[in-house]
Length: 139
Image 1 (cartoon, rainbow, N blue to C red):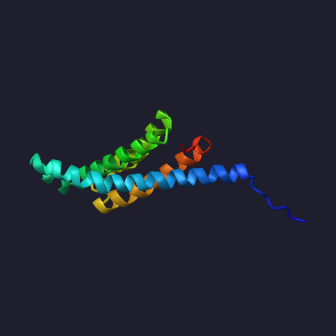
Image 2 (cartoon, rainbow, N blue to C red):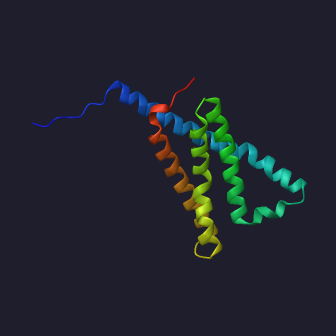
């Protein structure tokens, strides 16, 4: 005879809130790039610095900032703790920062920097959401 593990309603609720939190943050990051991106490009262009966008490493860090600002703002609106916001913000930057070393050494391409950086970023975010899954609330 086999037994099937039955998840409690509380467990399902925690999982639902964590998944919703992850999706909200991802949407906020997308909005950050969509809204802040053009503003940042305009500001850099107005300052005569539009050439910086030709550098993949600079572009990656600017994009991480656009995503992090919007995501952090949304987390603060949703009343997440400052440590949680700081951890999630670090998850935006650290993959790219770490990958800058092999990029600058010529070991990976700009496409790899961006692709791997994003993949690791989303995995790091998922791990942090899971780690703090009992803290997620909406209100």
